[in-house]
Length: 314
Length: 107
Image (cartoon, rainbow over all chains, first blue to last red; front, side):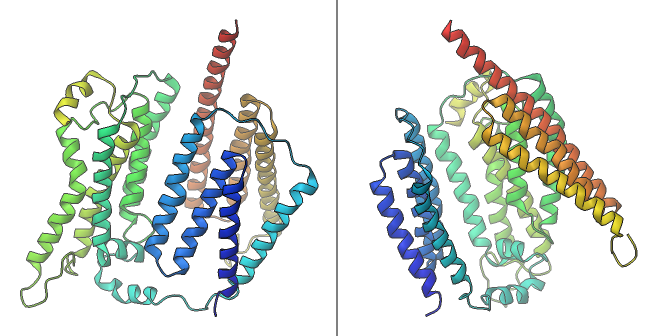
């Protein structure tokens, strides 16, 4: 009967939010309540011991659907501003929120004292993983299959987005923003390299470094720089695919290098080579992630080079 | 700072004063962001918080770090200072351009 209080509060909140979302008179309020409902629903899935469904619900139910609802709202006619509530009317929601908050805090006390066994399992295997940071060890050694598939998902997302991407209008940039983005570029590259390298022993790694690089590239791209960074460029395409490609090649190499008398396991690195393999995989994953995100956010450059390449790419 | 890593009373007081000053500017900036009527005065409030508030907090934290950490803190402050000024300029120019367009439409 652990966490009974938490479960009761969760059920109550789910029902309240669902009712409030349906009965709300303002569409914007209904959408916000619906997003909150999605987050509570994710918690409910997590309590039902289905973490994968919980993550999907949080990302799709709350995040993506909420964003879609908001973008639909933006096309609606602007609604009249509601009357400002007087203090007694504001009191009831405040009391409700305080009660719920108190209940959840009280439920914290019911949490079981010991954490899951996964930490101990990770710590036991970390010596053979090639890195010393547990998160990196899990992502790129123990559960590298998941990471490989994440890279595939990213690649598929880019391929899908390319089919529906609208034309990018050519724009002009102010000299100030152009100069600042150029000044930032070397620092971004330095920091991304540091994050990638630090991933072996501290928080960091390919996804963080890739996202940072992509941020720098997007800022430059918004200022009409980096016109070579487009899908029509063969080397860019190769680098985007290389995240998955190098991962798979390394997995095949690891199978070849495993002594014949032991069981061959897909994506299991040999301990003495693990550090080098992980670094190589992460390096190409970083570049692939950075380029993919840049193209997803900024689209193709609106220059003659892009028009030339569009037919080729499609 | 002595060998045990303890600050002297004077340093503690100075660092706390700087931290509180920084906090004050951040709170004032946030309130200004929420309460000021137009983009320009909001930008004014927020960039004050970013540059002066963060500067005070960095200065207050420098009593606790060694030389290398302090250099990094200083670098962070300079970066935020520069990016704050640049983005403030860009946002203000955008707001001005929009304002001009609205006025053109009216005439």
